[in-house]
Length: 382
Image 1 (cartoon, helix red, strand yellow):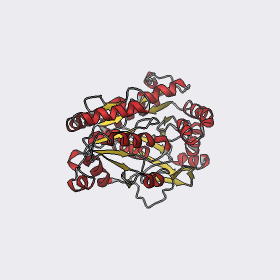
Image 2 (cartoon, rainbow, N blue to C red; image 1 turned 30 degrees about the vertical axis):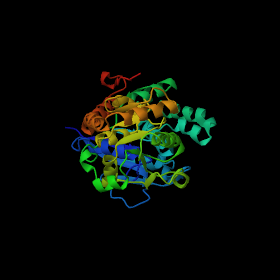
Image 3 (cartoon, one colour; image 1 turned 120 degrees about the vertical axis):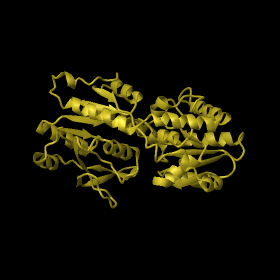
């Protein structure tokens, strides 16, 4: 069995705490170690980290409004030097920053095929920060970047269609999965649950920032409190809105960032997840909540569209309005959250990382074939 040399280029990876880093790690962990020789190229982590695979670190710079993340600086010659002594069979670029562009140019110089990923709707974020004017430029950059790769992988059909509409070609879906052993209903903590009170508990997990539509979650919670006595909202995560919201809403529990068993306990100890974001390419928290036995109220996009069935394991808003999201949450609380949570767990169990890694392997091997070869014809979903 031949071994494939796989170079991973990314601006974010563990120990960073975000969906891109976590999903990339799960994907790599589930690849067959007998078939893949993996090396990772990334900005130097800002905290202690013991790599699982060989990692090569470069300098990074912090991202405005995202101080917990960083961009890798352009390093084309640095990559060429390393790849001349260890030539990859294929390069997977997980992020579209300066380091990703350097990797694209280095791979082209060395004749190595490239697969890219699209994880974050940066072109939509500007609307939430008063920077809508940069949308056209951002879309142009994404189109330029991804159309130079053999294939762009996206985590949902929504994202694939959106990229097709802006002129990005050769797009295919690679869903995210969930660790169903870590996120499990058995992690429910009676003491934690009791600390929140006797009423229903709604949970939000994610960045507490404008692009996540946080005000909709809070206004929905305030509306529902008028009907459901003792209702509590618990918000897990951090971000630029947290400090002001925490001062304005002392009745809401703000936990800050949680990881590991603490995060799993919070999921399993709530009654439902409310996730009002409209900017997700996937929304990994949706699957984490469902694996933990929680029904989900969300807009009909990304992971929610793929996995949530209204009246069965959650509720989807009928459209993208705030009123529709509120009605979805009302329906959820009026129904049987316990049974819907059981159904949610069953649905999440089907999102197995091993199967997703096998599909990823298929995509990688396909683009490694000669450009005219029949196996290189990876079908786009749009």
